[in-house]
Image 1 (cartoon, rainbow, N blue to C red):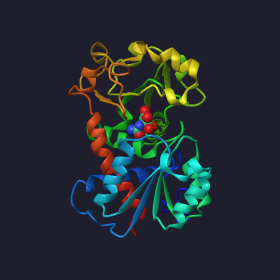
Image 2 (tube, rainbow, N blue to C red):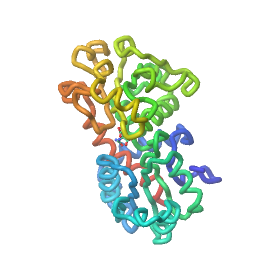
Image 3 (tube, helix red, strand yellow):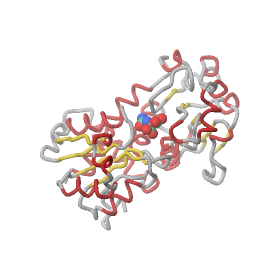
Image 4 (cartoon, protein in one colour):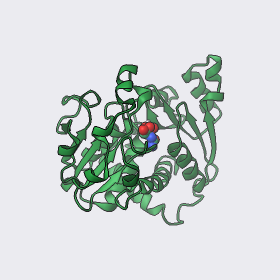
Length: 307
Ligand code: NCD
């Protein structure tokens, strides 16, 4: 369990198991992280970033966040690890835990890895999910929701569109869960039919195969990359050279509300899911998301490790 029997957050592996009051608390902590109050407050603690998949933003911002708090960080790169010598993931993580790390962030292509590891390490080490397959990416959802809240604090009145490769996106899944937790009513998932979930997977969410219809009057547009590495070859080749029907072009931005914000978790593929000029426009908050990622990860580490 993410929470212990006293209701204290011990791990972070899923937005699905996070309570609303914890989200609000993490947002307040992230606000505080903009001041110098907590700098070096976790000196003496240790963190291992165990990444078995590529990462730029997530791994660097966990490292920066930890260092700002005074935590010693070691980055474990799977391509140079004993996984290549036949060691199982469980044995690798048990080895890291035995070294005495206070926390391990883990990114892996298998769904449920973080939760499974938290259970098998028997509570000795705090586990933070940095992305598990197509399942969840909780710190990304926290930073996305925090960024939305800075611009548009009343989630209940917002229309939010998430566009692109929804079914392979752990970012989309965690974001939908956190938006619902915060009271959003109008969430629209837009993409080609074979990249959209079924209505049963996400009740009370609008599914649309037309970007022009779906983007009408939204406050927030979240664009997603096509995650070729997570899909079958036949589906991947279908979208290899043509994603124009779902690209956020300058003319399509006129469908959004005038003060709408445009988001993307990164890495962006310019002129595929988002026109280069749109990614760099005044409406784009993509780099704000990155900046907020450091604050939110500081908040998460503080919440989990500070006594
Ligand atoms: C995302 C991820 O890894 O899930 N990137 C990120 O963490 N910002 C999205 C993606 O890979 O497209």
